[in-house]
Length: 544
Image 1: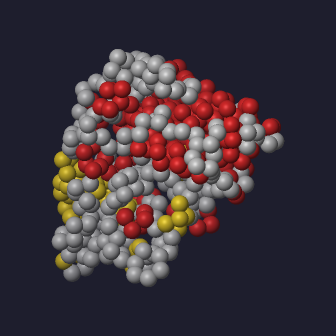
Image 2: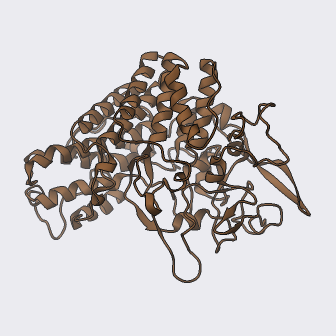
Image 3: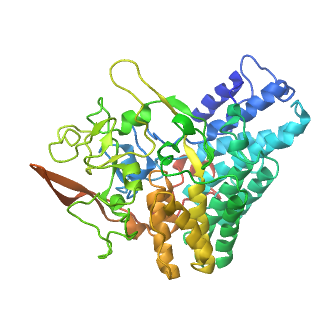
């Protein structure tokens, strides 16, 4: 994102809006007394749009203590057993006790985007020919903020104008189909005028919206709208529209998959910042908080927060055969469980004996990374590896930080979105195989076997998403949109107990945590404070 200028008034309004109702921010501070001073100035108008980007969500640390949404799914456990993330897992959340509540926050930034869309045409932007592109960015941001609301709360109130306190705000919620259609329209408006892709942006503009970002958001939105949670009648035309939208991203030719050697650096540190696989990402932060929160505990007092589950580890196929470990012909050896596995296992998850920062991690009983008396010790026998840089340092002495954004859209997800939607629309046709096999081939995994049925292909695509997109917040929402929550989330999650006898190791699965999921949890509860403001039309989501 361009860093040249963000006005003081923008920062002040951001702070005030977070504390109060989303309508309760003003345009001005002690330096700018009149709204006209914003829109008459090129610099101030651009600065107002820059401020709208503050609504983007950086998801590496939801609570300031290392929680991630993966810990509220079957992907991981938080080593801090008192973490607020656990209210998702034990049925103690509700309208008065929310977590990751983005309701007022997203409407706050939708309003900012709407104000820009309304004011920019008559603003002092120079040259005026830049105005359509800047409005394209606002269309994209408005669409993205509506999507964040839709995937949490389902039917929502569409906000396509900048409401004021004099307006009637007790408005009916639009259906998911109506919301998805509006998001798609905004994405089309954005894609028509924006820079083609992230790689076409100048160095100072990385993090700004692009045409492929808008197309990727449209594709993801239509996939959600076509999924069982929102498509009870299984209208296949919705699946086809989602497939067509994902195919449009592929057809641009602007993005590709990184190689296996490059994959660890996809998340924009080192020499691959904002690489060709990244479609849209937030502005990069420069810190070591991710490593401090998630590295194994013997590394300079790290907190080891994200502990992958055995369920996630089991999802990685056997490398040589390409088969799931549950297949008796896969070649999986439970006495040597991490040998000959999908290479992404070692890239995304730290297992016992794996090298990290120059030495082997010890998660066997009594090992330096499995210490029951340390409250931060892994609860599952695993630590997260994805996202983290081994060049970061957080111990005694000078810190070494890394630059890393939150990647919101990447090409591998687009391919998986395309495969899923096309399989539901047409069955396992050649393009379905091609999309999934591209992702498997980049890490040397065998292609999917020919002759899969539609149901079998669905299972393989869902497993591929579980592996490729782990810890990126997809699993939490994927299981919900597939309506498989009672099957996959309403059960215990497990870990591995590793006992060492000399050089011999034995492995025993054990229960880590019992999880609860019921039908109301497919949607987030509407916060009670919002219901109180709109008692006539808003209404609570079912079950809450």
